Image (cartoon, rainbow, N blue to C red; front, side):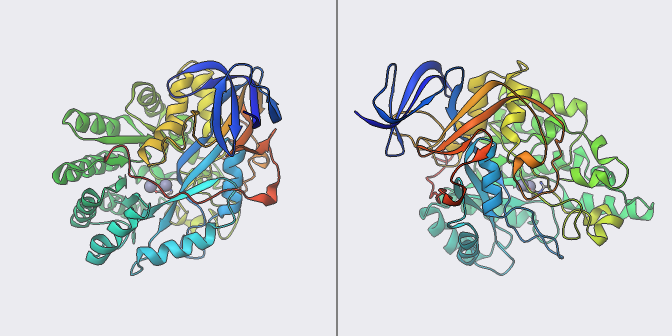
Length: 468
Ligand code: URP
Ligand code: ZN
Ligand code: ZN
C-alpha cells in the first residue's frame, strides 16, 4: 500500500505497550504498524522520539459566560490552538445551560461558538444547572442518543449548584439514559458560611479563597455525591480532586462496589495554597476551585496517579486574564477574593508537566502517562477506539515527543488568551515537538502550521465504557 504519510524509526507508546514501529497513515487513519514502511508521499523521521496518541483533555472551559463583566480569556480558536501547542488533538469543552434555557438552545449557542474555529477535535459535555422534568425527561434522552453522552453538575457556586434532590433526579435520569455524570464536589453552604466569617474578620485577600474552601468541604461533598450515586446506582466521575481525604472517599466507594472514575489536575501536583499568599494581588493568578492545598496533598495526588485512584489527568483549563478589569483584577476582585473569577489556564501545560514531573522523574511509567492523558479519556467519554490509541483504523492523532527537549515555560509560548501562566519559569524535560490531527501535521516545533486551516471537527460520542 502507498501511504499518505509514514512516521519512521520512532518508539510507539500506547496505554499498554511500547515498541519500535513505523506508522503508515492513509486517509487520516492509522493503516499500518510495521517495520520498514517507506512508500509514502511524506516521510516523518521520528528517530529518538516517542510516538504517542495525541492528548485528550476532557475538562476544558472555553468561551463560557462568567457573569458580572468577566470575560473568559480563551474562545474556541485560541483555546484549541493552545491545546494543540501542548500536544492535544482533542478537547472536551463544556456547554453551560443558563437557567430557564433548554439544553438544545445551549448547544446551538456553543456550536456557533466552536464550529469552524477549532484547531483540534472538540466535543461537548452538557452542564445542567436547571434540571426540570422536561430537561431530564425529554431533552436528555434525545441528546444522549445524538452523541452528547456526558454532563457535569455542580455542588458549589451560587446559581450553578444543585440541591441534593436535584442531584438525585439528575443522576437517576443519567442512569436511565446512559449518560455519564461528572460532579464538582464542594459544600456550598459551608463555603458561604466561611466567607461570611472571613468578612466579619476583615479577611479579603486572595489567599482567603483557599481558607474558605477547606479540604473538609471537598471531602464532605465527595462523600455525599458518592452516596447519592450509590442510592440511584449510577457511575459518576469525581472531577478535579485535590487531596487525600477526597481520594479516600473514592477508594471506599469502589470497595463498596460502585463504579467511580477519579480525575486530578496539574495544579494539585505543582501548586500549593502558598501560591495564593503573595503580595500585590499576585495570588489571584492561582485562584481556582478546589484550591491547591499543601505538599502532603501533592504527594497524595501523585500516589493516586500511580496507584489507580485517578483514571483521568485533565487540565480544568479555565482561563482569565490577570491584569484586566474583565479578569482576575476586576474592580470588585481587587477588594475581595470572592469576586476573583475561579479558574486558571493550563490546556497547553498539562501534558508537559505530567511528562516532565511524572515520567522523566520516574514517578509514572510512560504507558500509564498515555492512559491518564489520552486513552482513559477516550474510553470514559465514548471516543474509543477511534481516539486515544495508536491502532489500525484509529484516527491518526499522533504526538511526537522528544524526551530530551528541555523547555522553560513562558506565557508567550503557550498561545492562549491569558496574560500569564501559573507555571511561568517551570523547567520541563520532554516536549511534544510535532502533532498530527487525522494524519495532517498541525503543530511543528512549537508552532501551529497552516494556522488558518482550523482542521478541528465536532465529535459525536458513544456511551461511556463505564455505563455499558
Ligand atoms: O476554578 C475552577 N475550577 N474553575 C472552573 C470551573 C470548574 O469548577 O471546573
Ligand atoms: Zn468544577
Ligand atoms: Zn472545570
